[in-house]
Length: 389
Image 1 (tube, one colour):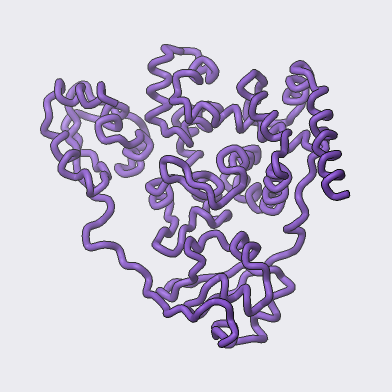
Image 2 (cartoon, one colour):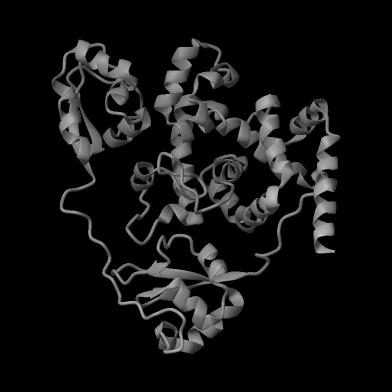
């Protein structure tokens, strides 16, 4: 009977969106109230259809998680004077999953890269990654995308540039030779892996506004209130789940910042998100909550110290002296970074730079010898570097 019901819902969903014509999709998107331009074409349609298939209930899971955090995300965006529709980027970039990782090493709801996260004050260590803290990550994301928007003054390009980097966006604009500021004339000049960002954002907006029309509802696994408790000793997610009789996978889902499911004792304040009905049990157990019993399935774990940064830092600051004919886009190209990063490192408010101005550049220490040579290269040698990219 259960299999029959699942098949019935699957075919009902297929029938619901199979009847929607391109004209109707376009009308529905036009009716969405949004400060960010939304349009419809074949690129957008492919992502809409992916959502509407709801493979293995994945779209229902996305809706459930998104609705769980929507109010808090919207509040942070409003505080930063940004359109609340930007919350849909949590859907389009990660599918509201804190456990996915992009090819560039981005993670969290907003697939934030390491350098961006560190520049926005997020803590990342061997055990903890605050890019997976939805509220802290949203605050960092809001500041980052607001900075990008100042440059482009166009939301489609800003959304694409956030994920692709403004270096890739500037290249695409240059290659397209477009002077109208129409994102769709630039779209195909972006690297293929970044072309999906804005179309999928529009599809996410469609999903949030019309999922009921396709008979898709949020899953119901997370329909409970939560609260946070302080963790005073080294422990593990498994240990707390066992003591409080909470499903381990659920507790891991509620606390994604702990990369190894270990809560370290490193001098920082750490907290755990629990279902609200388990908070009293946590406090009533007191120190016992940290004790591993003899009958525990998990063997006692010897506390490990917080991993200290290596003696050689992961990134090093070097300097580049501006030459005649240099622009920030070229310099970013030389050092494989973004224009917004150079501006942030140097406190620049515009793209204007002066001959002989010294610019801070942050580079991976592992490639320090390579990048240090660039400042002494001739214009011809630097142009060859740019041509290789």
